[in-house]
Image (cartoon, rainbow, N blue to C red; front, side):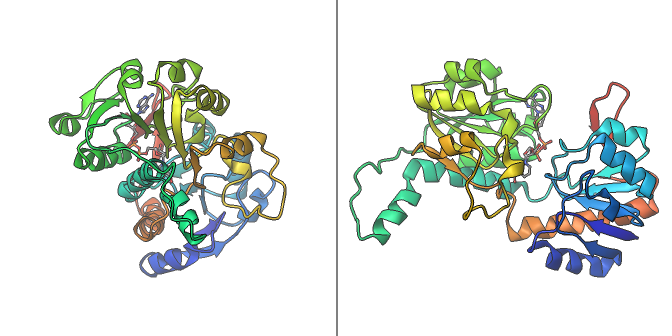
Length: 339
Ligand code: NAD
């Protein structure tokens, strides 16, 4: 099948070409992201493959449909950039990579925690300048701390397992409780109780209408003073302006984020020789207890290989089967179901 791969990153081509040895599709790589302005590039391609920052709005989907595209394959688990109702309207199949090494993201959340806690980034810079002082570098033991986990899906569960290994107590909030986690000692609580009890909170739920700005002023006010908040999920689960106030008043003692509400304009780009016009991220970066990474939690060798393999397998499945695994469909109640 002819496949247009949009938003191709320098590191992906090698993995996709390797995965294609088995699938044998006709791949064309575009560095451009897919949106209404670039959609004409998709002419003649039955399949397009996109990333999270591509804008798969109703008008993009309508244009794709007119150009003959039949399937959109996301090289990601999240799909909040796709208008699924429009996809249904224009009979466009949407597929994704529902799981690729959830450990990659969970382990990055732990890296953010331990960097903020043990200040290894600051020690590294100090020692390089022959400053061997340990002043202001004191951390805390993870052992015995209460960790709140919002969303115990694939990534949340991998995260819980790591934190249980550190000897932490885990409290969790999810709309669906997971029996395996309960048997391991994870206690499910209301969102409010999780906020009241946790020393560290890690977000692993998707971005939905219910979770948008879940972490807002009301939530921050309930937190213990000095709580550490980690977000490797989606930026808009946190109201960033409220987070800045919580950092100022001390409810947030640390903030570690791999995702950011306005990341589309900033992340994955080298802006080192320009002026960043986003005042909010500049304000965040001015706090010494904030750590930001540019959406790289997924970025391990294992995860990138799996994303490439599953993406091309999805296209092969689409060619062969009327209904495919990894297809995102919405049911009559307009909720998303996995098949
Ligand atoms: P998943 O679907 O396996 O788990 C999500 C969990 O969140 C489920 O248990 C679900 O019941 C729960 N949930 C849904 N709505 C909720 C709500 N309103 N309140 C509380 N819990 C709710 O997904 P996953 O694979 O674990 O991924 C989680 C998120 O991580 C993705 O949606 C994506 O946004 C993000 N992600 C980030 C990266 C990265 O590189 N930073 C990579 C992959 C995924």
